[in-house]
Image (cartoon, rainbow, N blue to C red):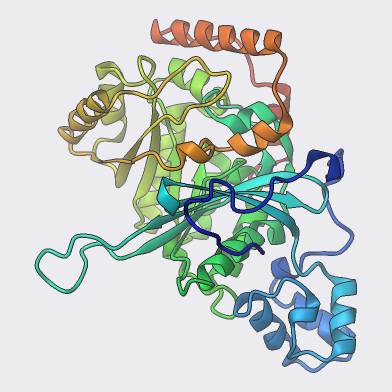
Length: 433
């Protein structure tokens, strides 16, 4: 795990050297499981097979989650010979190396994680200081430290305003690879006397297409014997995998469901969120509405504001009509700059007008500030940058296709194009089917 440096440093740790990384290729699983991602009871079973006392499980979990151990040698409560055996059987840490970039005067930390097979994933740690005392000694808003984590290496959904979409899907993350992102951030915070308060699955990948591993990660993060973060401090996002939403509803989780909506009209959402061709927007919202009614938990709808594309009065009215009367809240997010995309963020005055129009319908709205633009804030931006510049001809074709499809959508026409092969394959193999 990587320690903090001064907030003024644009790069806290040295960049990962491409030539030193193994080629991910088709590798998707390591021979040794990650220790932090073991299913409940699996550690105890292994200890019993090794002839070790049951209390070793508590010692190991304390070393991982309380002492932030990176290696078996740091687990000093264990006998030396047993530490060697533990390291032989498990990976104590599934993340090989971190590259950290700071932004917003140190309030945003974007981390590029190198995994053991050479895959690259990202997480973003955002700090929110306490504010608003209103004449009393108690703040209206407590200090928060929120971590946005990845569930896949790359993504098959291919949203054109998302840098991860340029990478395509590499593979699903293992449970340990998900929770080790949290361990790394928690370790950095602990070094400064702070604690992680919130975790959101809004990084690289579509969480509900790796749903089994995501649910295992949430269980570990919520387990008081392990990370101990309350489920109500966890947000799981989806771009609209309806079977996954239905499955979550049946399980009745207490974490918050967030839906990356970005458009309320099918022709436009087909372009912005290609998954809409499989599960149209009304079907996504219907499943989300049922989820809210079953769990009593408000659904958050994320809406990236793109100038001249999805920020018109027509779009605001369509969104208000779609969500009116639901247990729902809309988060408006000005688009972060993404390479190879012809769009720009909606100007602040347009965002404010859009928000006001929705509020008049009785739907709650929050306008989110952009964070970390000087650190490659867009999801997947660091990994996309590391992958190298695309050929100019490919960039031109991509931009032309985006412009052509979005212009047709603004006229109300739906494209006859189907799902990409990658996305169709991801849906077929996803844990949410």
